[in-house]
Length: 327
Ligand SMILES: [Zn+2]
Ligand SMILES: [Zn+2]
Ligand SMILES: [Zn+2]
Image (cartoon, rainbow, N blue to C red; front, side, top):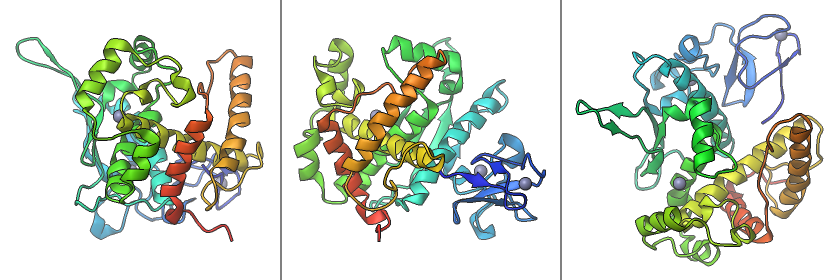
């Protein structure tokens, strides 16, 4: 993420600022300029009052929502107490995702015509008392998120039960779109052979792989080849996890550079992935040490082994046409 300043008084403002704390003017993020600007009579997103979305509305002929909210096809039932706050938290995480996708100018519709869109759903109690569970996942561009993930206590309990090191709303968003960009950049992009050499055969039985993972857990030594235990489940999941980590690394390095914490190459400029990974690993170690110094869990509880750098390199290469040429 870049660093932002108020266009009127130059006070530091943030990606999600609605007003400037320095001079009090109303602010809006404009994804076209990638800047926080004065709202100044321009129409803000129709969700501005309701969930604090600070993005500018798209062109009038494209509707009243911003480029991020417009991708949400279904919002949770707002008559259920708490769902307004869950919706607000998920959209805030999703805007960070969409920031990256728009900066990279990634397609939001596949060649097969599947548009990236989101539905935010809650588990439902059926008349017979059974609970219909909503599974977070991706299907042909449609990302489903279970809104209970927005409850900190529930998400943390899931994280502990699943033996995961990290579970966040932004992580879910970045992982699920990874599946969409497998379709768009790998399958439709004619890169399946290269993918298979690095990640394994994507056509192996997915349900059998999931069942095996939940019955047996990850294979021993998984950290030598995979970024997370879940990435060992199936080559699709490995790609989605690695895609999420490429976005963590890119956004993390852009943020750290903006605050003068590292000197790393511009992650949005074309070039090899190795210098980015070489900057990211010591930064992550330092961030974790800071977290521990303040009594918090590790900020980035992952080890990036050389084969994982290679997989990140594959994703970096898929993005090459979208990254600015460094010159
Ligand atoms: Zn100001
Ligand atoms: Zn919005
Ligand atoms: Zn997945």
